[in-house]
Every structure is written in structure tokens, then in C-alpha cells.
Length: 402
Image (cartoon, rainbow, N blue to C red; front, side):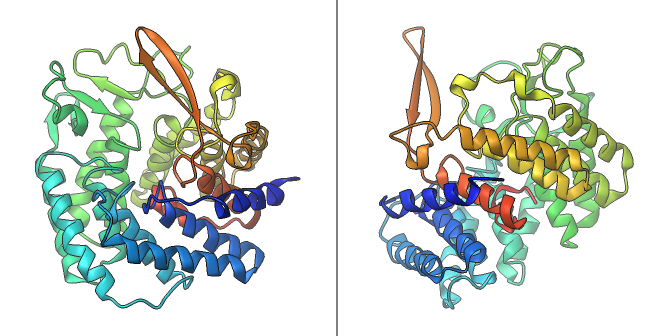
């Protein structure tokens, strides 16, 4: 496809001119280092590998001096995951094991605190530490945390007439949000990311009986929430409440919410456990989603990974890699074309800006901003474009995709 490499290099140029103070994996410099590593892998240009190493060296030096949260998205859990990833791939290092030993106790203790109050949220709660621990499963401390994670996820589950599920952790811990229980079906913060993390633990050969039971319950509850209105643009809503399950709100195509990541998780769980019904439903979901170009307000569509066009392109690419069905590769390429066309902002890095809106004085305020990280910015767009050229996407394990 014309223009992809040129746009990747344009993204690199914009990143090289920008001082990113955020150290994090999904919003800051650690994710940008991963972009540079895979750009080196694509081009063979050693200057990009040097930039990757320079960024990580600076990140490690600053880590002990900068106030940073624990979270996987924006904190030291994600930074540790990113450094470990780059080390395993041979892009950086070697570094002394002490780097991880110093971080491990902070990561696991803070995440245990989150889980104790039911805050499992992938981006900001306890799930991110479980993903990190799976990469460190050779250590006793990681295995102990995974055991604790399973016990806590089992403890906070809810089982009633509608099935096995987990209450939305933000709703649960906000005393101002009274009323019926809320169950989040989005991937960034909800039940599908619990299921996918449990699946990865199961595939690592850890706690197979316990994880399978929780996975099966989570999948069946999610499937039961399917929107029955045939006119709905999406099959699944972003969330459901105990008292409003018959009036769910449809979702756009995206990584963070909606049908695409539900299908991704559903297909992989069906494959792992030999349940073809789940795989068939997943492929039906994805097939329906290939026709959904017209449901977007393109005036406010951006290209970011989280909720924009590059993430949609990547998820269709990932599903093609799972199934070999060429329709999904073709759809991915159409979304890549849309992504390139969205580089329309003269003041944005490589022409891209991220869209945000908020309500003020009963008015909707539309705002565009420059973003540089993996989740919402040009580093993530660049990684998606690199994957289109080389077909390699191990980096997206930080987003629980592959």
C-alpha cells in the first residue's frame, strides 16, 4: 500500500523532535522506545535501535526520581513490562536483574491493594500486574502474585440468575454512583480483559481448573448481554445494568469498547477449549463489523489505537492472522487507508491529532490534541503501520491483542 513507509518515517521525525516527559508504556516514552525497536526491525537502520536504547536508559534513570502511579497504562507496572519486553526481544540491555527486583514489590503490593477493593481494571487496576507477572513467571514472587490474582478475581465475582460476572470496578468504588449494579463489557476496563488474562494464565499451565471455570462463566455472561434489536449497529453494548439490560447502548468499533475485542477473546477461548460455537459467533461478529464504515461520524474520527481507525485496522489484521480469512485482511487495509487519510491536521505530529469531547454548561466541547504514545498517539499509529508491512505484532501483547 502506497504511503505507509513514508508516513511511518514522518511519525519518527515528529517523535524525534518532541521531548516526552511521561515515562509510561502506553502514554509515554517506554512505548515510544518499542516503536523505535520495531522501526529498526523493519528498516535495519541502527540509528533507530540507538534511539530505543537511549530512551530506555533515560527512562530507567528517571524512574526513581519521578512521581508515577503503579498502573499498567501510565505507571511503573507498564514501564517494567516494556523494559522486560525489549530485553527479551534483544533490543536493549543487558540490564541487571536488580531493576526488576526493585520494581516487583511495588508492582505486586499496589496491585494487591487494588484487587482487595475490587479494582481489577486492565489499564489502571490489578490486571496489568498479572500480565507483567506472566512475563516473569520464572520468579517465585510472580507465581505468588498470579495465585493471589486468581483468588481475588474469584472472590469478587458475582453469581446470580444472569450468570457469573464482575461489577464495574470504577462504579463499585465510587460511592456517588448509587443504584443498580453496573457490568462493564468494554475491553479497556471490563469483563473481557479479565477473561483474556485468565485465558493467558490457563495457557501458561497455571491453575487450569480454576481459570477455566471463571473463563466459561465470564464468556457466557458476556454472550447473554448481546443486543437483541436487529437494527443495532453493534452486537454488544459498552455496559449493562441490572435494571436496564433491555435497553443497552450500542458501541462504535474500537479496541477499548465494542464487538472487535469481544470477538477476539471469544475466538481464542473457543480455540483453547475446543468450543466451536464460540469461534463461530466470533467470526460472525467480525464479519458483521466489516460493513460498519457508514456508522461513524468521520468529522470526529481520529486515528489513535484506543478508539480510532488504526486500532480498528490492527484488530482486523489480528483476526485475519487468527483465522486466515482474507475478508478481514481486506478490511484491515481499508481501515489503514482511512488512517492515512486522517493525517489532516497541519499542527499535529505527522498530521495526526486525537479527538476528545466533554460537556460544559449543557454544551458539547470538541477538542483536538497532540498525542505521542502508543494508546492515544502517533507511536501506536506507527506500530500499526509497521505491522502492516512486516506482519509482526508481538508488541500488541501490551494491549492483550495477539
